[in-house]
Image 1 (cartoon, rainbow, N blue to C red):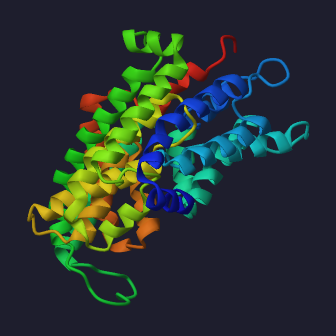
Image 2: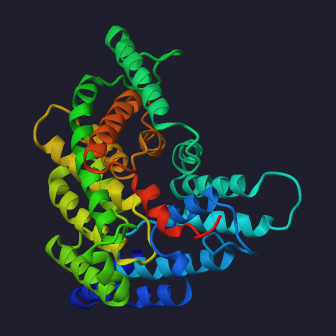
Length: 386
């Protein structure tokens, strides 16, 4: 991203035009050399973990060549300024490396365990959040928790946490090290931000499913016939979003989210709107790239907009709750969303409000998008025979 920033400062218009050119070129390379490297990579890992392999490889969804192409193509797109993240691709890359290195070994964990472990390691490495990696494996890759079960667990934890806070304040067993923070505004704002993030994130997933999902529509038929032209159009839309937003939508969105967390909420709403557009364009184009980090930036913008609206909640808390809510709305994985934000921001006091916001978001998201997006997209990556 530093390379792209230097390019943008030197030549604005040529850098803007890198987006449609980069999308077109990378879409062609993906179609020609590594079709299994397209998109996030998480649907491929879910499909590979759920199915028996056929023949020698059972497809190239989690193999070393696919991992290598994924890394190279994502790097090219980031230099071009595409609104993609490296977290989903890292899941596929690490799963592919781990699966390749363990092929032919006798005994030990099975193929499915290896793939799921590699995917979890990818999340942990990308965000430096080891606990979130474990939770992601359980909640999203393995699906060993039933949806109703982990919803009940979160709800009971939230209720008990709120009751404890109401009775004892921000209580810590061995005492609070540092300044005691009033979390009442965060608790009160969490359901509102959660529902907004869930509807916003669910809308993103619903639109993405309509554009690249397994169901046949006019758009998906045109995309299947003209994938390179479709990617070029998506690149043009991403370029327009970057131009209108003044460059807010370039890259994964780390710098923008960090700025908002540090109480600079003025550009929150524009970031949320245009990052939504740019990320949807990148995800729909079929080029390699994840949606985790851009979703966090979009959620940060939404949370900052809530803080700017004068709800009485601090800017940092609103931004963190917005990030967890929007991510939970997009992927419908509330535990993963809450734990990632807790580990990334080192805010253990916000665990209760984060869980409440993430659960509210998942609940609201299902009104718009009944099935989690990664599992819906994984259908396209399942082999014909098991």
